[in-house]
Length: 113
Image 1 (tube, helix red, strand yellow):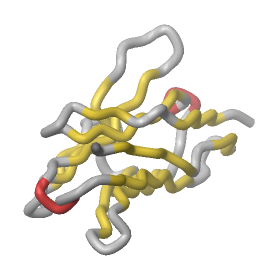
Image 2 (cartoon, rainbow, N blue to C red; image 1 turned 60 degrees about the horizontal axis):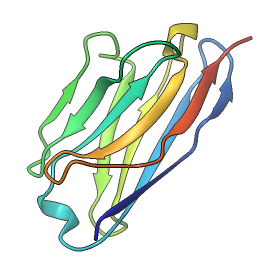
Image 3 (cartoon, rainbow, N blue to C red; image 1 turned 60 degrees about the vertical axis):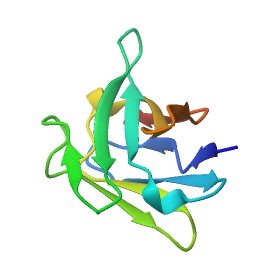
């Protein structure tokens, strides 16, 4: 059974950086497309970035140039490096196994001075 556990959220000042990590348990991590989503307060969940098993990445227009998604096949982790953070990036960030439709519990990111 696949489980996803996010970490790395917290409070950061505008313009700051943060790296989120998602640890996956279960077999055959390398074949899945993985993604990060976020849900701002009072809004719908939205895609931030995804990475396919071949390494092809995709980013939301609002985050392009400010985020990088990567995966470590040995550690079975997916990371989201974020920089130049803005107050509107405040949200709960979720890790998602796209192929199996499995979600993590989410980690809160708050961008505030």
